[in-house]
Image (cartoon, rainbow, N blue to C red; front, side, top):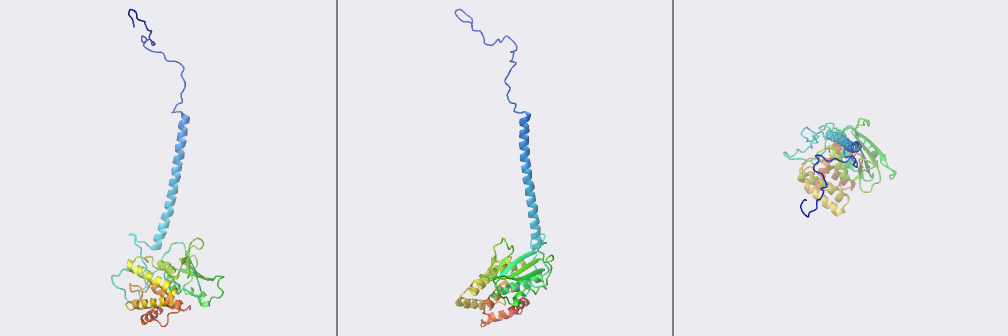
Length: 326
């Protein structure tokens, strides 16, 4: 500032010059767009893309395996275009079925009405352990039906826990037409063994928990015979299950008083129907109850309706084959 008594301050910058000279030397800062840095970023992105691509390929491979399994299952169930399984025609008993009644798959089939079914290209192996002192007759009834529907390969062996097995039991699965393993759809291996809690069934002998009990083994085989085993009304399915439980827990495992009560229930039920199931057709309930009555030796002296039913069962070819092994 200019004036009397005032100091004159020299400006820090000379604004009279049009341009200010910049220093010729500066500290060099790291360039964020340097080539080496961008290469690292690209390599990281490439690694992530490669991992994503690898994961996608893995998912696609899993989808292919799943598609193959679904296709095999569709062939087994013979699915139509609308996704509904084509059921195999089943045995029509001498009693006519009730019209308009929707039935489940607990019925037994015959060779006359059931075409050869397809289980895929791999044989379906089944291993069954049974005690020769109480042979599960329902197994042979169902096998007679199963062998008329599928190409079966069978084998019978004796476990070291059993000393002597009657010849009839060794020939119990010899009624079907024997086929080579390459042509067979189902392979059934029956091993006579000292099992304590009824027969046991295994599909994978090394890794599967066994299916125990004659009724449960019968359920498994019945689902092979009729894929839509559980497709009926809930009342029908529950009625069949109730009869199977009656055979397993009351007839086989019950006291004499409980068995007598079971016979009275059966007699009352058979007073209205020829067969045990409410559908009016022969089912696995008939096979299992018939088998358990023979195992506990209660086929004689039974009420009249039960006696009539026993004769009706034994008039069927499948039951005759099972009865021959006793």
